[in-house]
Image: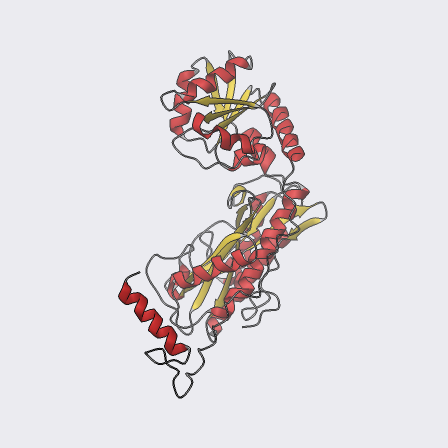
Amino acid sequence: MSVDRRRFLQVSAGVAAGTGLLGCKSESPAPPPPAASPKPFATLKPMTGDVKPITVEERQARIEKARKLMVENKIDAMYIEAGTALLYFTGVRWSGSERMFAAIIPAKGEVAYVCPHFELDRALEQVVIGKDIRVWEEDESPAEKVAQVFKDRGISTGTVAMEERVRFFLFDTIRKAAPHLKFVSADPVTIACRVIKSPAEIALMQKASDITIEAYRAVIPLFKEGMTKGEFAELGAAAHLALGAEGNIGCNFGEYTALPHGSVKPRTLRQGDVILMDGGCSVDGYRSDISRTIVFGTATQRQKDIWDLMTRTQAAAFEAAKLGVPCEEVDAASRKVIEAFGFGPMYKVPGCPHRTGHGIGLDGHEWINLVRGNKTPIAVGMCFTNEPMIVVPGEFGIRIEDDMHMTDQGMKWFSTPSPSITEPVVGLKI
């Protein structure tokens, strides 16, 4: 700090304390400083104190299930790199880079890892399933380490499955290092494991949903005329953080709500605008994905009519989502309501330009989609978003998105849909 700057602060402090410029007491006291404005989320408290992370025992059970599926599909080993599949099976959280960090799960034998040597200590902090960690130096090929794992597990010929998120440059080096092996997709193993959530996973997703709903409850009253999307996004992230989770809530205003994922063009909030919000957070890796739509000010009759249509389509999808029903029937049920209104058909707008919902879990978008052509029957433990959207090009778009999961008693909401256009979250009237 410069001398002049320091002197300025000293003088300013003296004035605030009721002293003159020379440090003498002034004849009349200075007015008290204005009270600090309260932080918008000072009353929010973390909601994660009762969270129970996925146990090592559950991850081991996942690996055993994967091994049974591997045997059924004639797969000798499965290769997984950094990402949610690695977290799902091993509990290791690792960001992907050009340096390979991977797990190899053999149908028989110990799980092995391939890790940059200089990252070994960090790996040892996290690896709790298996002790075989093969390290590679910067001037070595990690693919050769992977090939050696195959050889050491007795896989001299046979089939290796690659998890779907494995990047091509890693796959390419591995198949060249092990040209005698056949490489296939691991989807029959990984998807079959991950689409059916356990009670522990359901509990984590419920917590994520509860937190996002509370974040909405906190931020929706803070909209003000002239606000930017960026200003609101900062509030959404801060609210989630105050509630104990990393998350966000984005939004779009007015005519840009007719674009399902919004526009990059700048736009400030005006009276009468439709506001479409889309948010979510993560609890022990498990996601929520919830949308809300309101009107800033007084809604027009057309806005009310389209809002009501959207909620009826969402309700129709929920009612159609029964145990054993093909996923495509859920999509068809919501579109039947839209077409009866005179919109559509199918993806034509005005109407719904996208599928009715998608799977959700460790990834915000997972298998299985609620879309025409998907004949997968809904099973206990499957989790979905329910988010039909009504787009009126050039005017606005309405989407209410809630998460749901199938139980042996039928479909259950993670989050309760908006009761009305003026009550976006239960108990919050605007």
